[in-house]
Length: 415
Image (cartoon, rainbow, N blue to C red; front, top):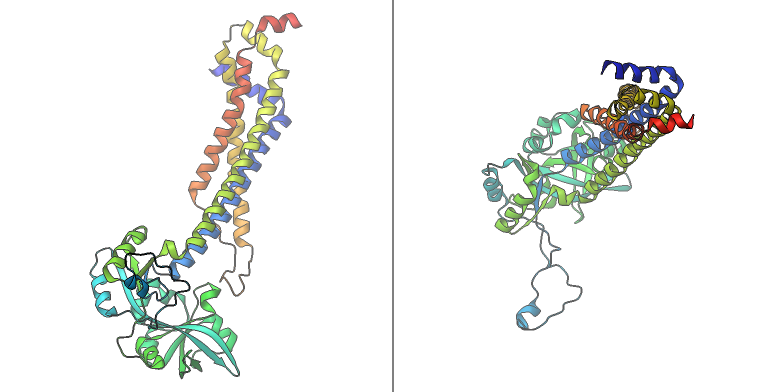
């Protein structure tokens, strides 16, 4: 075995340029794999975290657009009834017995937190301009348990909202558009024409422009007053589970139990999740293609080496080396090239990932992001070196197998 290793070492050292080129192929493939996967998974994790932190695992509400039984079904119950352009009934978005439903859900051991909400479309009056938005009447401390609002506060405190019946916490996007700050007053108008001046007691930033530019929070009683509704008027119930993967099953149970629409996070974010899956497929396809291309480079180099070393192989076999020994010589060469190239590729990939993470990035009004999010998870580095070594091992096996079956007599006769 020692002699086999020495011969393999001699082959590698005797032609350093050829060995270096083979290593660079692996290095480039692994390096780009690490950089690309780190960036793409970092972006996916960042957007997923933003989305999940700003949406409930289960959202219960009164879906007034759902199809309902028509009077035609009663007129001709045993026949075929076709109803075109059925309009929803005139009803409010109120969830009846919302507080009782909330208490029942809170006793479920699978539930981490639950918060009743009163949500309504509003207009933020900015001089002669009306900016469209959404106001959520909440128990701000319960909302904090679900969405960690405290960590997203840019000015003011959550407790300030509890101390002000006319207080409001608005997104940084709205504040920037209206040029207001904590302590200023704004006037909001409901679609029904009701207006009310509110005092800004805090600013929050979710990091998603579609939220920061439209959403605001107030006490439930404040929004009920604005909408001129009674104290039992609740439109939504947001739920966070201990295990969010149970959301689809639990949502189906709640919908059957309470008779209201229960939408799980997977359904609500289906488009977003599909985008993540597609990006991951593209990322891994491109990355693994780079490694496979590097493997073909090693195959070509080892194949040319074997062609040039035919006389040496014939002499070795004439001296008593078996086909297995010859195959092992070239397999050792491919494994050394693969391992060293992979290690160098990991180092280069880490450096590239670090540089990308330091590069400034302006998310604009849509995403709160100063730098590119990069994932430095160790599993991608382990995957890179394992795949790199396996690729080079497979790339070296075919040429080494060819070398093992070389007939020394034919080579010597050919001389």
